[in-house]
Length: 114
Length: 114
Image 1: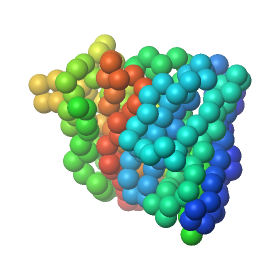
Image 2 (image 1 turned 90 degrees about the vertical axis):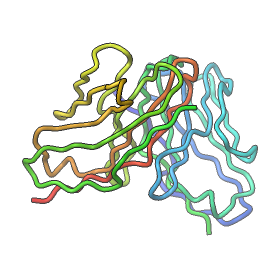
Image 3 (image 1 turned 90 degrees about the horizontal axis):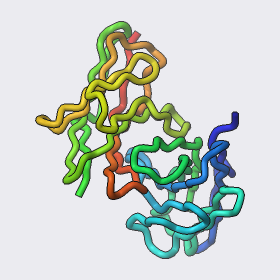
């Protein structure tokens, strides 16, 4: 039973570029959430997708956008990259959006901005 | 607003001795509380969750946590530390009317000495 898978594992970009990160949820899960984890900090919620719609958004600018596909996989897009966007980006999946449903995390994509 | 405070950024124990990782939460509503563990260069793994059932929650790998409403605490314990327990631990809160996002503490790094 495959867990949450993310690609790529590492990525290096320069300021001003655009990046797309990908996530496949755990089998049987239909909800995907994205988190940003800066070095030495806890993850920060970016947004969540359910039924191909963004359900809630954290305190992130519009440069961060996403998409969910009919097979429940998801993409995170970041435009006009800044040095401060360097972080580990984590994808988490769950079954439904109930508050007590545990979220299962992938190993993340390490994004470095030069 | 909800928040969690992890009282220790680093905890160091000897192998075979008890582990205590402290967490206090703030929530205007009935919270759900989780502990996640993150090993180096890995995503987060759920250790245990509290969702208003029994106040003493047992998790994986011998960890448990006790929900104390009067103290607004959810401390994580383990009777005997193992070298493989060395990792970053995150206390997490969410609430019934904000089902989408997990709010993470800043993390506690557990060091286990041989």
